[in-house]
Image (cartoon, each protein chain N blue to C red):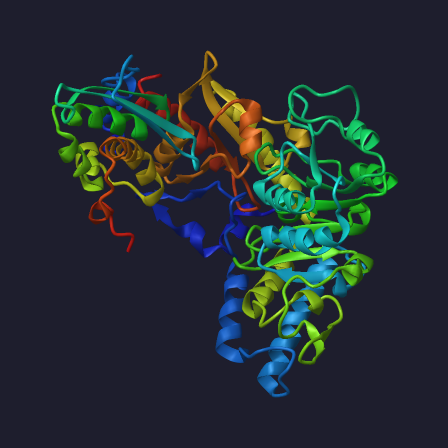
Length: 136
Length: 425
């Protein structure tokens, strides 16, 4: 059990990084996982050139996996350009979490990334089909 | 008294280990495990006498037809139907209810009519009626719950969504076409007083449909005593295979209903532009049916009938009572639903402190899984019910004839461990 709920994950869950709201975010996007009731919102502030993530906050309700994932991701994207954010993959999230997840919990872990990427695409107004994960 | 230790040896999967620990399967409301006799019935069918049914004259076809129709009679006797003609094989409870909504519903429910359901219904006894109501312009109303998770039959207006059944029937007199309730809640474990409800529903001139997905496997069903008009249930929740379920309905109702699906087998004769329908129940079984799993369901019914459903229910109710007592020793644990004497073997709970979820049910379920324990976490296909209780999700342990007190002990211990993992001990 300890290897699943690693200290790091529990740490991110009980003391999440960048938890809260931004007053004037450049990007604000929320999505939920109707299967379990997880809900995640990301507020993102961009720097002067509008291309780099300057600050981020996340909020919402959810299980430890989704919260830890959101917290780790918020650390990860600060200082990245929107271009780099859009290139983040599901595997990047899993590498950060460092645990094996079955298909059901996978959805919890990937929800925050989904929110971030949807927000990033929304602002730039581009949707890159090549970026979509293969369903097969 | 059930000899559980011996019964367990009938279920091969119970020998399994999960994460190096013995499997503790407490997710029976989702699906049940299968006894050797059911598995063997499927194997035997495919090895010995697989053939298409009803049409063939050769030996294999005769044997397959005989076995399938025998299974139908077994199911009919199990629920004390008036005739095997009242037993329609479908895919599952959901399909059964959709069949009623599409066939009986479209024919009999008009604009302005009312269908009464309850706040505790599974989505499968809710969404088909939403589709019907939207299509014909009917209205859905809901029986509310009391603080112990029981249907409110009488009395003043209930808080929030939902009213008492009495009030709904009175205020919509003359317009109620159907009342749909679950025989037993898959979340709260509440056993509903179906016969009492039936009498009021009939007095109001409406039909009663019972969602028997939980009640038939765990309480059994006597459709004459229940006085229901329609009953839907699934094979896989009652030791049977997946992909097979039953719609039981009174002969007169089935006779009057138009077909659901059209095609082979549900017809007597076919011309280019019209056809004559077959007799019931075949009128509602189009195409090659799920022969193997129908036969498998017959074997499951044999197993349950031999044990006796009163024995099964008594065992589960005792286990639920034990679980509620044991779980009371777990700090912050809140159980939803009525006292043990009024419920079946379902115990749904959350860890709550100061009104907030202490550990999300998903995390609980993952930690328990690590200990080999299978419970379910989520909304259990009852989102309106979750909303009623103001939680996004709950954790659920559900029992069957092969569960033991030691498994409940394991559950309680694992819940304490979960709190330790989260630094909450």
